[in-house]
Image (cartoon, rainbow, N blue to C red; front, side, top):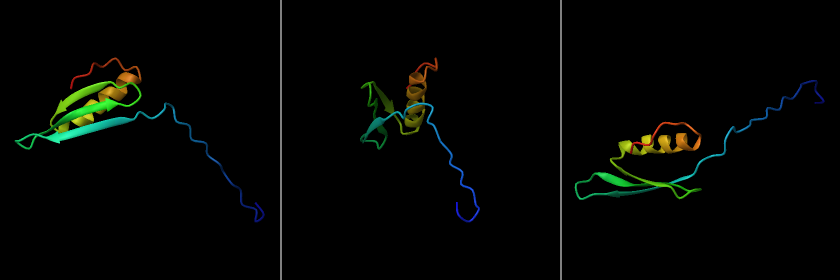
Amino acid sequence: MADGASATVAVVETPRPAIAFVVRVIASDGGRLKGTVERVRTGEKHHFEGIESVSRLIEQMARSQAGDPKPLTP
């Protein structure tokens, strides 16, 4: 740099490729949400009931791809 300042360039590496999911949600007659989480790359699908279970299911599916031996418990 001309003014005497130095520049620092940081290289950020992603340890693993991102995992893409499709989440399909419908509301039952009673207002409870249910649906399917699908891993885009493989087409693997798991059903869920209750919106509170979606994040847990996505986490478990991501961990299973990363080689974590925790079983899926939708």
